[in-house]
Image (cartoon, rainbow, N blue to C red):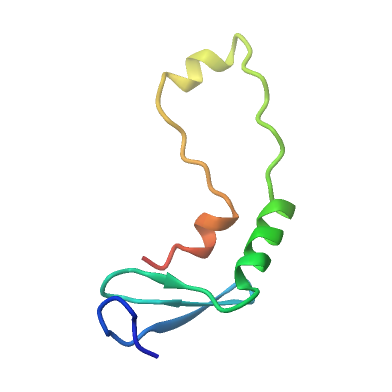
Length: 80
């Protein structure tokens, strides 16, 4: 299958049982019918619990640095 953007050959990747077509050149991602619904359904069921409320001891550990949050979608699209 060819990329609609630049005509490159699309690569198929299986992520958690969902086939994702992507272009290695322009990094476009295409989903077949029903695959977006599967991604949304799985991401809602895989949502992490809310973070704990910061206490007095947590302030020193945080130091104002942003924390990287991993989620279902970042795991699916880590092939780039």
